[in-house]
Image (cartoon, rainbow, N blue to C red; front, side, top):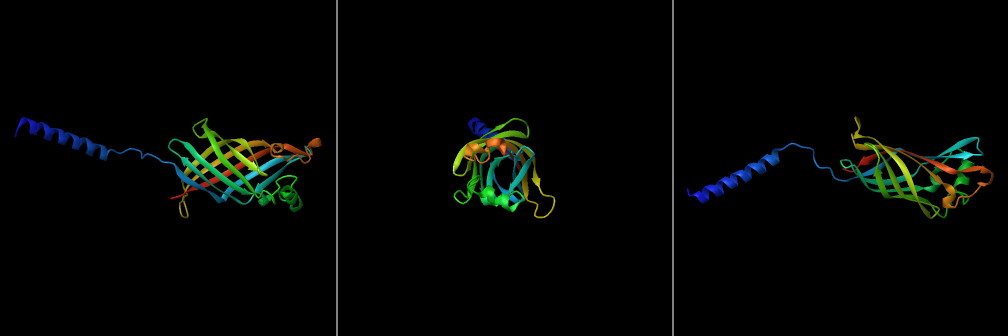
Length: 205
């Protein structure tokens, strides 16, 4: 065998060995952004607003759909798109619910959907961050910032054992920014509205 052939054979064997070693190396799989869907059975979007300063009224929305695109490895959010049916508001009192649906507040007949779309996200801790987005109510859109905690990820230990991400989020808005000025005089109904979100999101397989 000539020197040139020996050199070529050695190079080929070395390249093959490197490729095989790389194929056998065990390491963490590179994560990719995945789509998660809000689980309606484990989802609470609620608000608190002062009533004449005596106490806060709690309300929740019962008809919500949305998806989140999330890369757990980064971690990084690529998108959040949520739609809430305005007339699904429930404050535990029928007459008050109808008032909240009226033009004094949500104007649900003319603007049936409340929508939130991600515009940015910042990681502030290992499992904490802020999310900014456009919130549309009554056909008006304003920016909103939420403080978010990534509670846990994993498969349910029972049932169909779906892979789930759990989050908690908090924020505040001024309802007057969306044209809801009813009963602001005398602070009969507070302007500041606290937002409370507890959600589980199911990964699309």
